[in-house]
Image 1 (cartoon, rainbow, N blue to C red):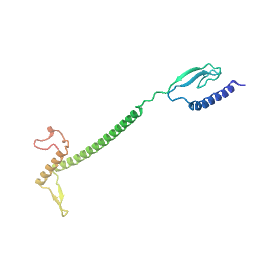
Image 2 (cartoon, rainbow, N blue to C red):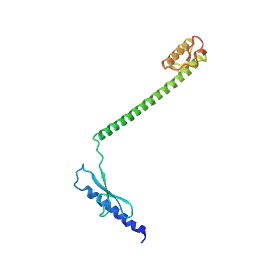
Image 3 (cartoon, rainbow, N blue to C red):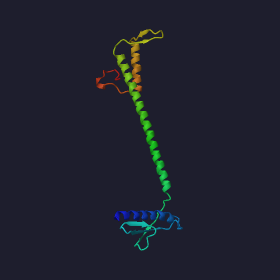
Image 4 (tube, helix red, strand yellow):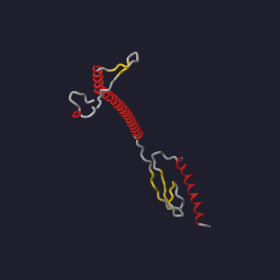
Length: 178
């Protein structure tokens, strides 16, 4: 018979012994604090085998296997770490919402500043400006209305803290930089 064919029944037998021995040892009457007895030996084929009962005649070495000591604070520590992680995630989410809101607010303010600067440029261009009255007729701005509109637009730019156009050196004395 081929040597490989002999190894298969031995392996099956060893595995079945280990599987049947495990439930039997668990059903024993040991108290929970005692150490479990495990033996280590070499089988006929030279393989190292572990089990709770060595075969008769085998040179077995006894190995102590103790269950790790339970940490009474482990559950509490894990719960506090979990709570801390959740808190950090909530903080990150809140910061992201704040950042998104701040970005949207800044963009809206910048867009509004662009519109107001465009109005200011139109007011100062000297082009004929008009508005519609209640009857739907065009009413052209006179110099006083234009100056009033420029002052109001300048005030709006300042209230929104819009950055001035150009630098102070390029602006004529007595005029707005907006």
